[in-house]
View 1 (tube, helix red, strand yellow):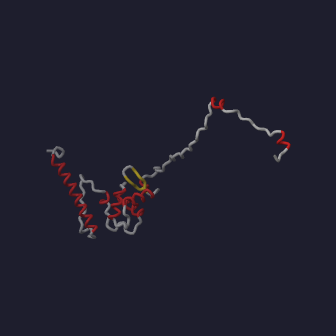
View 2: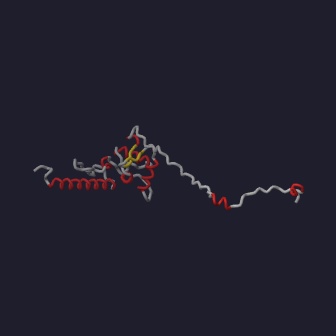
View 3: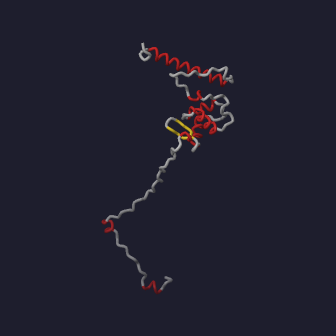
Length: 183
């Protein structure tokens, strides 16, 4: 029986994938407990397994200790060598010992990413280092047009309304007013 037609092959692949994920979680907990890398077993990789990218990058509990958020983001992206989502970056920085007191850590990381213009750039599958995309222009060239001022239309007076209104007369001073200016 070939491997493609064997129904157990898919089940076995799923079980191996779950085992590798559990082994990875165990290794992470051991790192957080401060156990050395010899005491912790690394997550095995197989052809059927897609291990999360930051586990491949060997993030230790002190990898980002003492760095600013933007420095840690740059270091993390350089380690994993491919774009990452903001939630994955926040999780990795937290696991890597970056100290923070943010109540909404993921929002803080997202804000920092958007402020790191010229260093990181948003791409369809996450955030990447700008240096990975040489020659590509990420600047928005089209500026939004300023809002137009509303111009009130002039009142149109109909021909009939003009006929109904009395004609305007200019009053010239009378002869008596010219002679007696004080009056």
